[in-house]
Image 1 (tube, rainbow, N blue to C red):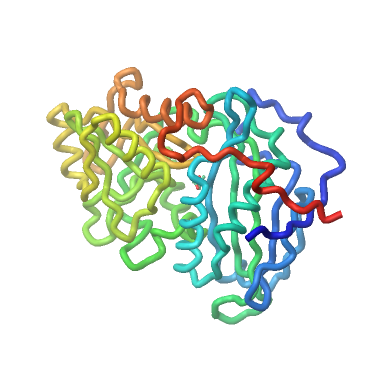
Image 2: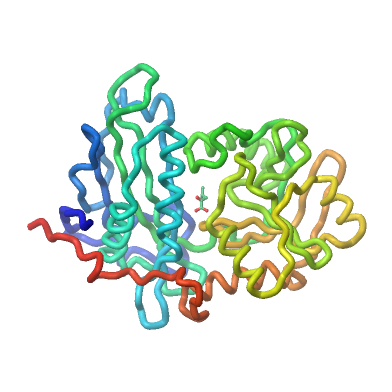
Length: 363
Ligand code: COI
């Protein structure tokens, strides 16, 4: 099914003000925004409009009860200047899993993908050319009933905003093993990309920053023993040549970059284990000299090396970056797929297709 999208083009592009060699993460927004409103059980008024603030009613339920989900994706260009997406349908599916958990309506996969292709086509000049930089895509859905009572909203807004980005963490990070606060518990909302998960992480992150750490390493909610995630990323360790990552258990976000990394490493012959990983195992490996690498992964960060892990008992200092072949390989593979330097043999790279995904001009 092809949806009809009304397009109102911006009359004055802000692109000339952007220095692609110096783009801080998340502060720059491209010229256009995709929006749609869910009313009476269907998505209506699909539109691409100039990017600008919009009005929201003070009673809008999202402001009160936080019924809001999002995705993080990237568009890049290959050497021929073709705009490309990586595994967009995985993001569409995860968006709807998040929607289901938060009692929100589905965005049909075809609508999600068509909107993505349309907005990226329109703002494709905003895709930074350098490998490692990208156009970050932020699909977002929020509850929009004007009502001060707790129920699932009946009205929602779905948006896709985009903006050029450089690296999320420009240097290796220091993690604090968090044993006071938790991010998620099985049965909670940890598997969803729900706004509230991030809100709840801010105080622990602030307290960790006061101790000199960049982010927290989340632990399980029952024993504070099993490692879950690193800040806003999934986490991997290399122990004695084996790659180990916590198995998703209902409290850990099912990262799409995490999934890509597992495929890439298995294809390259690495031993990869998805299983519970305790802090005790990491400390034992550290003392045995077999803790070789640790890194966080996510769409925004791709791979972010972990320089140190601190806890009440000790500070683990990990090897320097030039001794981290696995993390560096992964970073190069994912950036290479995005830039076309590495040939995609898995059908993950999807060209932004102005033909298949042509949108109605609306004028
Ligand atoms: C991403 O990795 O894209 C994320 O969604 C993390 C984010 C909160 C910046």
